[in-house]
Length: 114
Length: 112
Image (tube, rainbow over all chains, first blue to last red; front, side):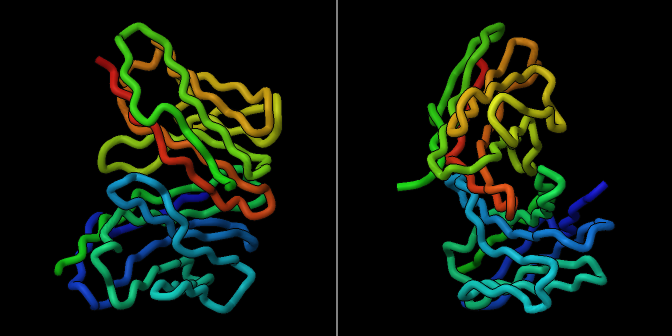
């Protein structure tokens, strides 16, 4: 069965610095999607970034980028120039079009220190 | 303005009562999902539906029921059989080709 692991329950970063959140997953499939979601104190889940497994190029969205290592089954999120508004829970997620469901990791709580 | 709405935002229930949480989407997505989130925890799947009039149990379906009579609506009923229903409930929808989840704002249910 597919699983998603986030080994860092809590992380902190100084404002304007860079932080990397880790995620590993387990699957026997070759075609799938990976996501990072952000949940701020409002609890609204917001998609941060999406990666298709067939794409070798790492996805980027402004200050957010991923390091997708397919062979290692690793999908880390890098946040550059951290801002106070980046403080939130971050969830890594795995999905397949043939599987119907998305599997979420347990989350990493990110604090941003002014 | 496309999106997912959930109502109410806060809901209080007495023990032994059934309550229904509303979820509506106008994104024309085929799939809809219900998740439960406890404080400091991740998301646990309760039920999901890929098409109208069909739905499947997730990981924690006991004490919950759903219906999918319309593509845009997927209400969740929390029954009196659910032993610990106090939690935050999130509804999501997704287009089948990408499985990207689009979330509603959530409902906070408290049992008094």
